[in-house]
Length: 124
Image 1 (cartoon, rainbow, N blue to C red):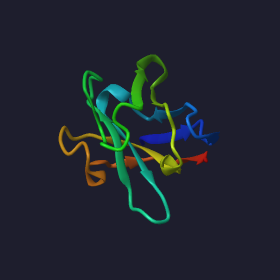
Image 2: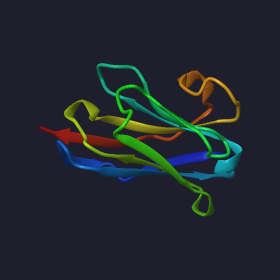
Image 3: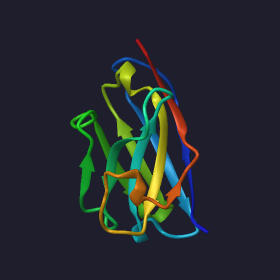
């Protein structure tokens, strides 16, 4: 059974950088399209970034484009979200997700597997 576990969240200040991780078990990350979504009490899940199965292409949400990047470590089965120039509006619970389909990268409904999330709080 595929399981995802996020780690690395915390409290940072505006302008800081933070890297969060997602480790997949019960499979290999190269089998899945991977994504990061974030959620707050006021907003439903917002697409942050998605990466193709082979890791060759990633698509970023408009609100994070130019500030966030992703990387993968296939040997560790881990997917990273590197967040730079953080803003208070980036405060959210960040979820990692995996999809066995090859489409709908930006839609949460395309993803079958979800981690519990890691909280990122950016103070002003």
